[in-house]
Amino acid sequence: MRIVGGIFGGRRFNPPARIPARPTTEVAKEGLFNMLNNMIDFEGLKTLDLFGGTGSISYELASRGAVDLTLVERDLTTIDFIKKTSNELDINDRLHIIRGEVFKFMKQCTEQYNFIFAGPPYALINIDEIPQLVFERKLLLPGGIFVHEHTPRNDYQKHPNFTRMKNYGTTVFTFFTQNSD
Image (cartoon, rainbow, N blue to C red; front, side):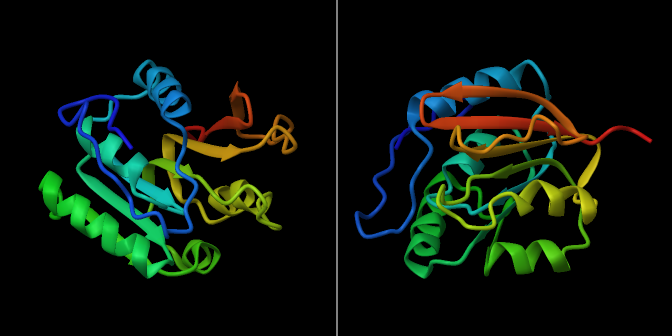
């Protein structure tokens, strides 16, 4: 696993083989952040990383200047890896790790974020509820961006907050925005 950009760009980390995460591929992650660089200024952002996995997306966000990072993950082995990596990057003061189930967190969350990323397991039965909950619970600040990672079998183009999608083979990123009211 490699951080592709920002102040930590080029740093490599090796997650343990036994973690149940499917990290976003390096090619897809690099493409995602190339797009985001043209859409958002990361400096000072408050972010939420749902289904945090190895922490790869949060490290990219921190590397680009996000200052308040929340990551939700339920697997303890994965969380231990994230804590170790966070310590090596010296971002412990910016990264808040919540151990728990993502849907429960979303239903109880009262915070709002400038940027939200969800990288759920592709086979998740209720994957389509994620965009619905982000907007029902008003988790995204006005002008904020939500990126949902999924496979081509999911289609969110009819969602009222849909803005665009980008396909990287079996990985699709769908972008949503919170309109300024």
